[in-house]
Image 1 (spheres, one colour):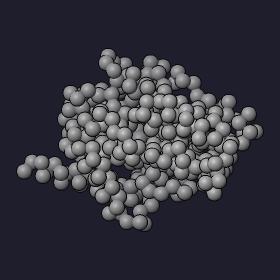
Image 2 (cartoon, rainbow, N blue to C red):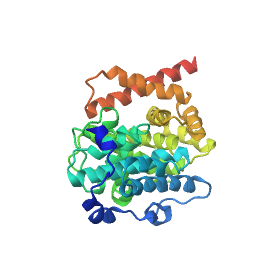
Image 3 (cartoon, rainbow, N blue to C red):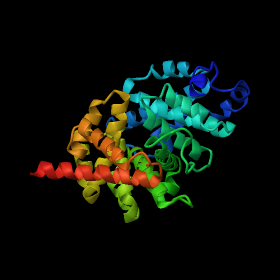
Length: 333
């Protein structure tokens, strides 16, 4: 089914294209930090992070507009290579929204993963989490149809990022959590919220630390994990700021390192590891990006083939933290 859909000349049925797609288009002004009332500070961080948002919207609109997945690839390839992951995150949101609106059981999203986004599975699945949030829905507890771990768990991360990015007064300011989430779902959602905090605070380490300190103690580790992921994947911090971020994380440094390792793996899967990612890996994990990415692989493999639930996601993260701790002890000898 996937191969036939992937080669289909029309990703979106023509009636849906004419009626629904114009309603789904997003205003590009919404990613401007001034419009969003995010922290504004001097330096390159704002431009770097807003460029990530622009790439996201480029992928989102391209997935809505193009008539075949091959056209989507051509559109995304016009972007700098290190921003294409954000574009496929946006494409994941678009395909997820269309699948949910047409009850197509994930066909478009599965075709996206099987084709253009094959090297960006983590980002695409995060984008699917945006789709649920944008439509006022919760991610399915059975995951996205046809998607295996670890990507199937990341939908909750994308859901949390969306909530923090678009509803900061409620979700960041008042630390509200949606009702009915299990502890494991909340933890993954909070990792996504931690990523949103990196944007909300414009990559400022002190701003990040102060925001996280306002949250209940049991949620802070997940938020630091998200901050480490965003700092390493999206960038925006200077070497000095990365070192300060590591110091400020304190007892949650293993969580920060775990998030950084996730980012290393996502970039490694894409085939491109930007300089800022390699630098952040060394600063936040004390290891090269190859070593940090390897922690994610070994921890996932240790879970076995039956690892499908959000509880396994928590064990995956714990295994990465344990490997970081082992690496740190070896470095201290």
